[in-house]
Amino acid sequence: MKISVDTNLCEAHGDCVIAAPELFDLGEEDEVVRVLDAEPAEALRAKVDMAVRLCPVAAIRVEG
Image 1 (tube, helix red, strand yellow):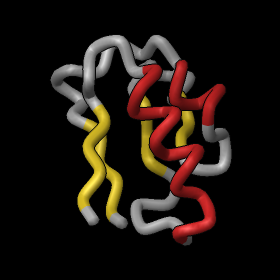
Image 2 (cartoon, rainbow, N blue to C red):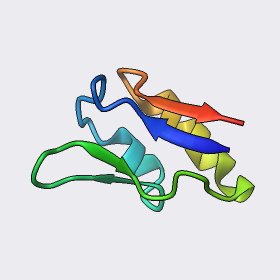
Image 3 (cartoon, one colour):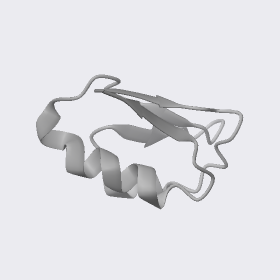
Image 4 (cartoon, one colour):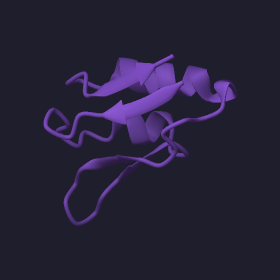
């Protein structure tokens, strides 16, 4: 799978960071979510799916 975040949509709510801190980080200086591992192991699929569901602005995309 491949994860991306649309930074134009992201409003830095941080729900993805709470759901999957090993995959997402919230920048302190610009408050934009960053993907730490764009191609995580399949074992993290449940956390990725949770992050996608929790994003209130649907800024997270998953391919594969």
